[in-house]
Length: 124
Image (cartoon, rainbow, N blue to C red; front, side, top):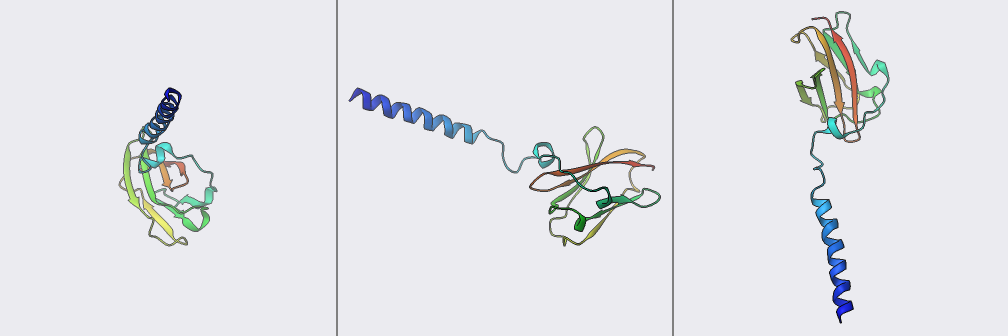
């Protein structure tokens, strides 16, 4: 009898510790750019006009469905963000930088499978 109680006690401890680990895991809705792997992409899928005031994102050239376009400063501060999950996959998205001051920025394309990150130099 004591062995049976010891066995059930041990099974209960293992079950509760596994359940506790699952409950403390990070939420799937957490910041995608911080936890998602960085994905490779071809350089011509994100390109600029001659003045570097407008960047174009060719969704058809990307091998993933983009959920959000984010512009961040080099220190990680979000400067601008827009959800684009409902745009057609053959869209060319225009990102206007004319309101930003001169400097380096990250353009991040967030998806469920990862993030594409490109550093751009805006002339201002």
